[in-house]
Length: 134
Image (cartoon, rainbow, N blue to C red):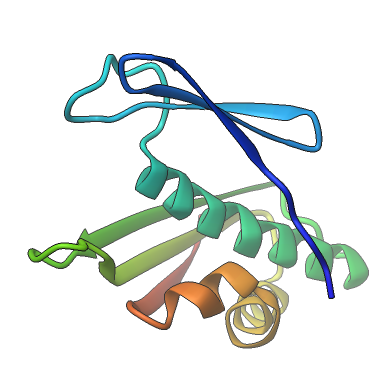
């Protein structure tokens, strides 16, 4: 079993500093804060993008088919009632200079087999995606 430990320190107002493995991230409330960092749910959405992107790159690396460029755009909607959770997430995988078939396979493997963040979020949200080759 893999264990993860985090420490969070309140800095000021709604600014929080989270630390894992000596790496720090600043969080803030988008509504009541000072815009000094991403809000916690925004970090979850960023984490989803990072998790699936790392899968895709790792898979493409093994296929010897790295893209010239690659990024993900994500949009999420939340429930109206509290606790407000994501109920729909749409991911756009956008790449340039990559074999379409290999890219599609890598994205599919990430979404169906490897991305733990996708699997966690799928418990409350419908996750859809599209692939765009520029």
